Length: 406
Image (cartoon, rainbow, N blue to C red):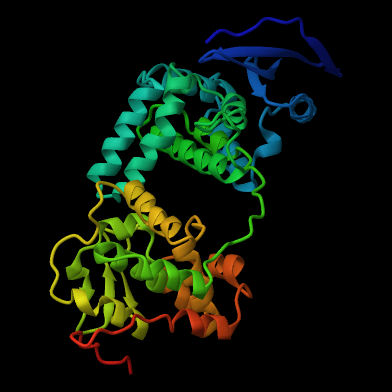
């Protein structure tokens, strides 16, 4: 990385003087512009702070000038308890000839020098191994690779040298495989993972706590309001008629139990408790690493009856994306437009319409009541919900239906 040089402008207020100038860095072939603010605190320490916007840097300079006038560089940010501790520290240093400010700066200088040198890529590798050893779900571990490997490639430097403005520019400039800007949701997911990375680095004592806290304060992008799409009962019936074997079971479980695609891919026939009429999503299979038990509705029991003696993994696909593609091809062959995450969205909306209980649906779907209410409330009528859970197979004469739910 290389910082561009520009002549700055001075900001003066009384005896306080700060210099603000535009700067830039080139990372992975892209130029990121930001604003650097420099000033000297009472006591002689030089402060350098970077900002994505000039207005933010100007505001910081105004706050610094007020603190400068008070004679305490961080006075504006201190709580009452911290000021009490400061006064106690000052009394403890009386007669030593050393002030509190000098003592703190001396400690920080020593602590900074002793920080281990780690590149972003090294910390990403360590975090990946740590989460895997901690028993996190496969999806979470893959998400670390998906979101942090590109970040490490863009920032081929020491992690302690990465600043919030640079990360903010990186997030704003993220592109998908098609070269188009990522959605706000995807950028926010990347932001959250980067914040987790810096929290991990802080826990390992690779960076100062202040840097991790500044990363955590990166503003989240405003999320777009996207209409939730579902399959109609007629469309779902058509898709199920076109499926057979494990594909039929996977479609039915997704539609009538709301199981996520990644969870569907990891399910085994043993997870279906035919006698108890429940589907068990183990902690090792759930996205949230939390076990949940989902009741099997009457219509799903009929769809699954032919598989009562099956064993092993249900999905015949090599990975979850292949599963999604396989189910989508079945829908297209049946002449039905595939809806992304449509099985889960349909279950949640129709189940909420029938139960009118967001907490129940949240428990079954492995989500929060707030999310269920925000995305699925009033999306479908109760009549539509009943029609959804009344989608049944034409029962062959040699198939014995399971007992009805009480």
